[in-house]
Image (tube, rainbow, N blue to C red; front, side, top):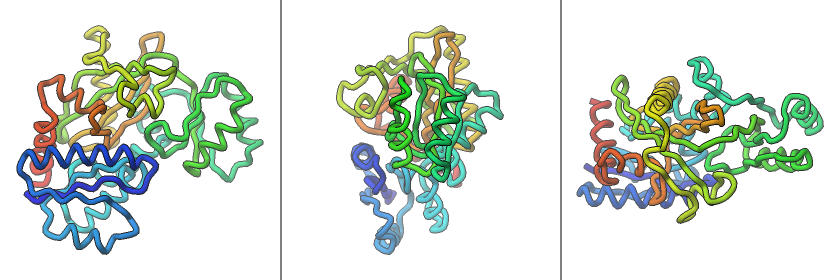
Length: 311
């Protein structure tokens, strides 16, 4: 097959996307596909349309805005080119943390208490409202951003103004959310509609205090425990929540669902990643390996599931 890989891009997660793309490209070449590697730039759409001519399938190795948010998926839909992963609506919903949390709550998936603020609200009004409705520690983060970019864990009120300012540099809407103390867990979901399965739960143990950008992507920044050391009943509960979250947003083929397991052993959902990282230190390949799927076999399975969906 002639397979294009869109990677790189122009979002603030470009460096991660470059690594994800390289992993995908290497695996596809090992599978003897005719691989077209495209460093995606939305300002060069004419060149992109020419490159995508006669392509059989597209892997989207992009992260963040203009890649993970449904925009590229919409373009490929217009061009009638099959692609691996979730469609426009589910990609957009998953990227919009406020709307995603509303969907999760509708399906009785536990979420942390949160409020969303728009940039047109005055800083004084936002600070005043936060002080009335939240106790420290709490999290301030952009509504649509990944990899913890623009996120601050506010432990003292002196941090609040800077945290709000930082989050607004990334997005026009920000979320203030109760900080949930606990263990970082994630679940990879795999399969086509009605036949999805949750892979083993992974616990992430960051080397720093919080699971920040460096912990996610730096070599040795965190330890992945696969499977997580939790009992069978709790494992099944978390896996079921992950599958339900994936389905409730309408995700397709694969996703990764992040949780915090609080001190009362209640799983609180954080977000669904429709295009999770596929770098050498990424969690999704680790989950696949736990069910005896190598990286290359995982990529081929994504292709098989996608062709099954389109046929």
